[in-house]
Each structure stands twice: as structure tokens, then as C-alpha cells.
Length: 234
Image (cartoon, rainbow, N blue to C red; front, side, top):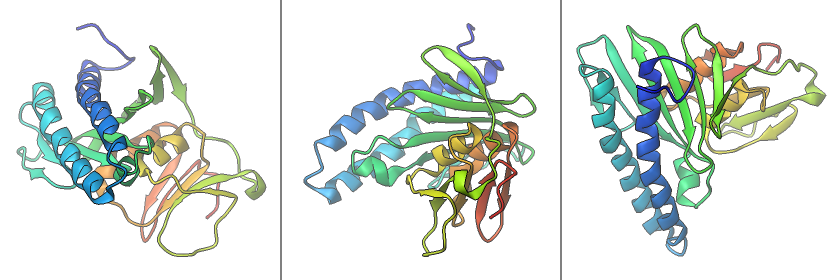
């Protein structure tokens, strides 16, 4: 097959599956924009759209690794224990309000380690991706470029994304985007210096975890989820 992006054939097949699913999601987004007079109706519509994502992409992913399991916020399917696709629609609350800042997060894990990660923003068609040991990249307008975490450490210079429910003291220029998968991708690409969050469903962060690490950052999953360039002290 002709490779669309720099990386393995499996990575490219996963990206093609994302693109096919995203075309339907862009149509759904247009419908949501027409439902803003009824927030309840928009929520129901987005919930069904998320379920369609899982259904539509599954058949494509099974062509990549037929025996793989599946983990999403709504579905767990045992694939025999070795390989597993991890899928989530991140930023669904933004989608509900016709805010384009949402993404599909997709990871392939083997023996409990993430090997391939993709975070795809379907509205601006920008892809962040990584493979274990091969670095992290951004793809847009038919061009791939390697990304790295920032090198900033001075508190006055920092831009930090938060996804926390308490009123804790923030550091630097605090941002709340509502899309953890893209927050992690933006840490990986140096747009944010760190990301601090309450615990999240693993399906939403599996891809972002590998992106950050392959871009030279670090991620800790304890009482809080903290991803950073490795220089920020939080």
C-alpha cells in the first residue's frame, strides 16, 4: 500500500480508518450546529455519534490485527490478551456545543504497552502520531514534521492546561480546553508546557501518553495525571 505518513504499514492503516470515520463525524458536527437550540437533543445526538465511531472504525481496525481486543469508554472486548485497540472521542462536551476542539484518540497496545498512538482532530484534519521508539510527529496538509516538548521552565513563561474539578492554585498561563487528548498532543508538540488533570478514563489518554513520551516529555499517573516537558515543577 502507498504510505500516507512516515511510519509503519499498521500506522497508516489505522490513520486511513480514522480518516474514513472522521468524514462521517464532520457531517455529524454540521448537524450538531443546527441543534444548539436544544442542548438535550445535541447531547443525545453526540452520544449516538460516538457509538457510531466505535462501530464504523472497528471493522477497519480488525483488518489491521484481526484478533485484537477493543477498549473504549463504553465497550470492552477481549482479544485473547496480547493486542488491543484503545479508542475514545475526547472533548465530547465541546462537540455537543458545536465547538470544533475535539479529537479521536486511538492507540494500539501489545502486551500492555502502547506501540502506536494517533490523536486526530477531524475538523481541522490535523493528526498527531507516534510509534514506540520512533519519535512523535504532526501531520497536516500532506506534510509530516517531528515534534518535541518545549524547553521552558520559568513559571512566568509557562502555559499549562488544566482539567481539574477543584479550585487549586494554577501555575503560569492556565488554559482549560476540554479536550484531554489534544492537551496531551499539545504538550508533546510544545504548545503547552504541561497538562494537569483529575484521573481520566484510560481510553482517552492512552495515545497521548505515548505522544508525550516519544516527544521527550514525561507523564505521571497518580492522584493527578501530570504530563510535562520534564522541566516544569508542579
